[in-house]
Amino acid sequence: MQRTLLAAAVFGIATAGPTSAAMPDYDAKAWCRQVAGSGGSFSEVIYGGCFAQEQGAYNQLRAKWDALPSQARQWCDQVARSGGTGSFVILEGCISQEMGAAEANKNFEFKREVSPASPPAPGMPTVYRGGQ
Image (cartoon, rainbow, N blue to C red; front, top):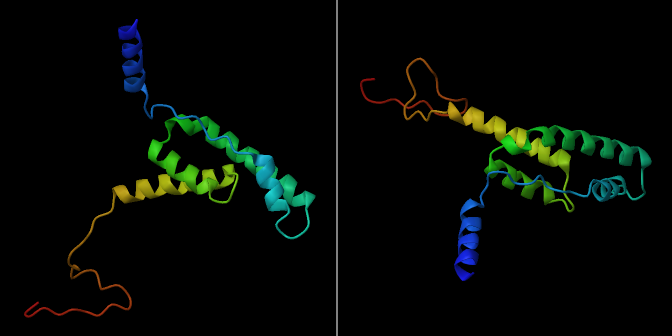
């Protein structure tokens, strides 16, 4: 019996991983109430618009959540929760920016010297090296 429990515990730990993290469960109504009341009085227009945007962002994320890198999911969840209850709109924006940056960073190359064909960046002094 003890061996069975130990094997089950080890198997459970070994298989637990970032394969499929559940999508965050934010309280969109609470978030939108907070946003709609941030001007001092409550606005039904802001509340309705906020709720529609939260629903749209949730629907977009739900379709692709499991395919997103776990690091981006975790980081953006923290960002989305930084304002209180959490926002699917903020989460979607963060995910979009992280994925765009990851793609852009693939092609980044650090250049140690400015080639003769490319002038220095505006505001930067031109460096002359003897004989060049």
